[in-house]
Image (tube, rainbow, N blue to C red; front, side, top):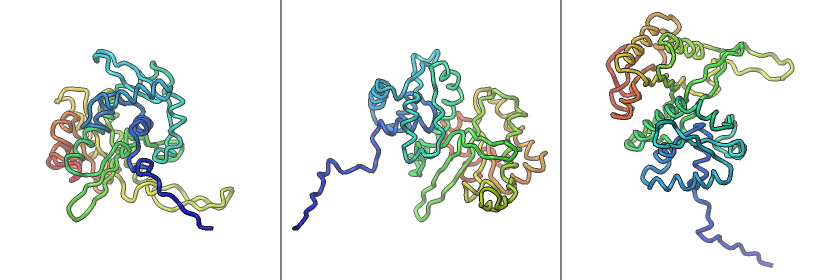
Length: 304
């Protein structure tokens, strides 16, 4: 007996690009929260705003997302996953291992909005620049709040870890960065002290573990080698104050590089830079808007 297999009609062939509702859930799972406009710019910048708002409202009727209305914003909605939505995205391949951190109420959402939406705003500056340049950097290439252990229960948690691929005519260059978004809500000294944490992460190597209970040997070397082939550059993005105040905060970051021996050692090995968010949005992150914390003239973040 001969068995024949019919070819599925082209309309039933899985598409390489995931449907928009799936992308919306993944983006909210990745970023925790985003406004309708931010999701539009992130996923469908050339389409009408209704292209994004309609499926968001449908997902809300299904109980997978909800929103909080931002104050003094002409009723701008900031969307987030419900507990059911957070449970659903655990099965998304791109988000496996990503803690869901569901937001349980509009009140809880309102407490997170200022910083979370500013981090998304920073991401959008890089996304828009990558589109203009033809580089590779999409909505899942920016991972907020990724924890890195320092031992003794201490951790370094950047506001985001960025993956970015510069595409030239003859080569592709993969870059990574720890991104700290500063809204001038903490003292300048506390901000600069974050450089010490990154210096500790750069040098931290756990002691080898014996064959005790785990029957495993630890991989020797710095702990960051578990995730990165090269230690990511460290980028500070500043906003929320006058230009003079932001310049002073950048000066304090540079002073930490000069004065702290661990940070000075880090700066000799790892690119460190700071820029003002308004400049990133106006000129693009690959313009000469980044101040090298180890000294020198402003330059693109790719050239730090």
